[in-house]
Length: 256
Image (cartoon, rainbow, N blue to C red; front, side, top):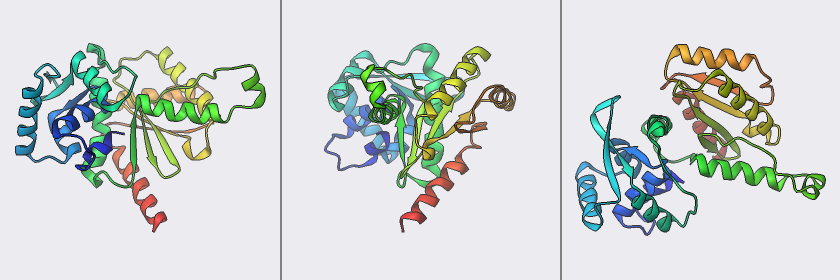
């Protein structure tokens, strides 16, 4: 889980925490966001990147994006992904294609807004591969005897991220505005089918869209299909943060 890299006592070297954090962020992360997630000072960040490049200069590369011209992101190279997989003992591949860069950074920005508001404690955040595994494990462990006998493999959606406070979970989707109405339709229907197999406390989906026009488009699309199995909320970037923060605060109060 990406928030675990904040812990300085997790037996990893400082530059390994950099690699692991970028890996769990989907393979790409803005430098400032990486510094926040690791709890590093500016001096510590500079020194750690220096040590990382001295260890192996081929593990990460810098890229610049149009939406943050005054900074840059770190992306894992193929060698970096291989190093991270060995480091974390995770078999799944992480590869950020050119068209996925803004999508991945958008998802990470949702998490960073929460971190900057309330820190890293009181909740958990799982990336796509982890979120998919959590949902799959629950579905498979609750299959009926008949389904098991038929060796069925139920289809389910893998959210962009999963936000968790205790037993309550929220699926998170970041929309770049590039998906067609047909793809959106399939996604909404897939969520409906998936949520029917999940506990009531998991049946919430937060969609974050880049513009108000796109947010309205997604909301209107959701009214065209059966989404009664879950609660869908639609926001533009930044509007969603308060809801996540409130969930954490309620969870903290409930545990006292």
